[in-house]
Length: 204
Image (cartoon, rainbow, N blue to C red; front, side, top):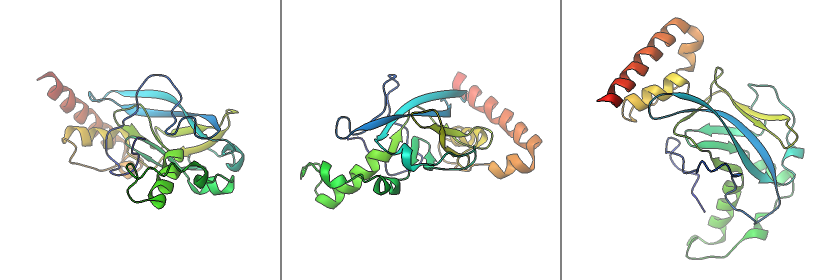
């Protein structure tokens, strides 16, 4: 069972094998959701990506349709992936008690620790990526099995924010959403400067 909590800036653990992503395969019925997102690779290149995640069956029925910019069933985006709302599991009658393994070796904290792990694993997904961004310019979009937009996120790192983090050796953590909205020209100059700096470092 992979860990999906912890540092918001940790690298993703997801494999890019084209298979639907499910942290607890075979444990409960699921439905396939499609995530479209933007990823910045180690060289600073921006890539549009797509992945399929498997949420518990019935999740789509509890999520209303949204417009881009409305979070809907997306709680947040992290460098490594997407977090959907765990509270929706209660709305659809998902009972984590049914899926307890009572494995004391993996869960020394007992049932409570395992219950939290199940809820998180059912709704939090690492996505194949190096650094996922999610801004007004590059939103993360989540579509239900019928192709209806049920979640989006635009309040995470911008492209400039990801580049600043990579160029600084993972020390400078700023999103730059306000800069882009208030001074587009300065944002673009900073983007070009950091891209050049990152590429120069990669060629040394």
